[in-house]
Amino acid sequence: MTRRWPLDVAAGMGYLAIAAFLTAGLWSDPSTRALAVNPADQTLIEWFLAQGSRIWLGDLSLVTDRMNSPDGINLLTNATNLLAGALLAPVTFAFGAPVSFAVLVAGNLAGTAFGWYLLFARGFGLHRAAAAAAGGLCGFAPAMMSQSNSHTHITMQWLLPPIVYCLLRLTRAQTPVRTGIALGLMIVAQFFGGQEVLFFAALTLALFTAAYALFDRALARRAWRPLLIGLGVAAGLSVALLAYPLWVEFSGPQSVPNGPFSPDFFSADLSSYARFSPLSWAGRGGDGGSFAPNPTEMNTFLGVPLLIMLAASVAFLWRHPVVRSAVVVGLVMAWLSLGPTVIVAGEATGFPALYKLLHGLPVIDGALPSRFALNLLPLIAAVLALTIDAALRAEGVARYVMPAAAAIALVPIAPLPLETVRRPAVPVFFTAGHWRTCVPTGGVLVPVPLPTPTDPESLRWAAAADAAFGVPEGFFIGPYGGNGNASIGVYSQPTAGLLAEVRKSGTVPEITEEGRRQARADAGHWNASCITLGPTVHRDELKATLDLLYGPGERVADVWVWRVQP
Image 1 (cartoon, helix red, strand yellow):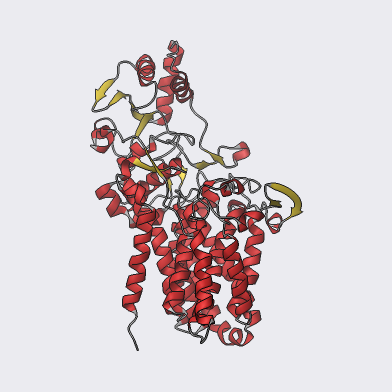
Image 2: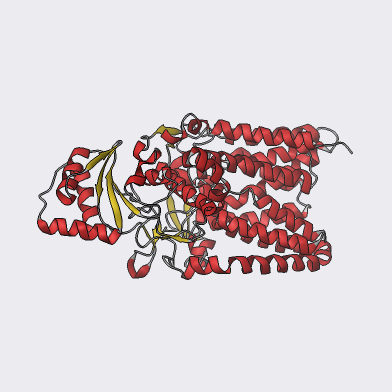
């Protein structure tokens, strides 16, 4: 038997090179480069990576007061990338969270592509060329590039191919107990890497398994027993390991009963499926982005050539149970992506979509409708891989026509590099460790400006210190909406609101003794050890205001510091 591992290594290196090229804008100086489309979320993810790295320092908390002090935040309610934080801790400690972020963005793209390649090539035994094309689609499709704009919990999909491989082994009756244990552990890992992806995968695989059983009843009769054994083992193990985290997420401190985003806004436009993404070569400079909720949620842009190729592939291999199952499940996922009501070319049709039946249900309510389209990528990739594989094994003109047609369909959606912009450097006070002179590890430092959902910049200062201290307010999902419902961020304390107004207006207000008492009370509420003023607009006015509130500040490195008693 010919050894194929050199081809597999070449494929992996190729995917890694592509990912490095697409994220090249971050690599020149990760600490001062940001993704142009979504810099606020990048700041948040960098903080999460710093917080996640603390697992190696013994911090195993799922609710932390390192943000939104003193109340804290529920890490599982937020897209925290705990798995990524733990895995990339050596990078974070050695080079900083911005470097870990760049590694994560590129690694998710390359890892997802390579994982699916290995599944198609080794798990299903398809031709390496077919597997390479399918893996590339799964890893670098327009939807993945859109989500790569700081939604790293969505692009962390490299555990899905091993999960599918475990199910494949179970259908082949290969060591169901051991395979079930491996499946359970991977489910737990994906839970801490990206719960939304795990939910989508579970739903898709459940529907696919049911459809496949209808189309291949002989296999269903052979496989049901080992499949149930393995799934039972996996379910028992994952439930045992996740029981406490699930309680924390849904009933623990700072948990929320609902998702904070409207499904009506984050629904896919039916016509977007036939359009090219602005993040692809064929869509660059076009108006395709106007058919998506925002540039980070362009999940449906497949383009007419790929849709035509997909239809031809389905016709070519319609008797194959994988193809039939993929069509059934794909139509369900596409319908769900349309949200509560079908929208065509920006106009609401009033025609109800499938999601309307699910709207408001627990857990499902937290999944944005347009993201159901992400489930289409491996389904489409499987159909294309089977088509190319069948063509390459055939004789005559089909051997050349179908692979060429697949290339013509895929080239237009080839991704463009992620656009980046420059951002301010983090103050030396934080990067050089001067913060230790005014706040102990685990204490609270109040950065001015305070981090908010619209401007979380000062979270970068905390991330540069590996989230060693807490900060008030922040950018997170918490229970501060009406009746304890989900909100983005928290209401500001009076002093925080005053400082925000000074930063906005550039006017130093009159400070009364009552204002000073309130400032001291707010510092006490935050349990703060010190207040720091870093680089920002109207810095002189902010310093004058803080001097009036807390007394004369002290210059330390490149920030001003006011020490207060916690």
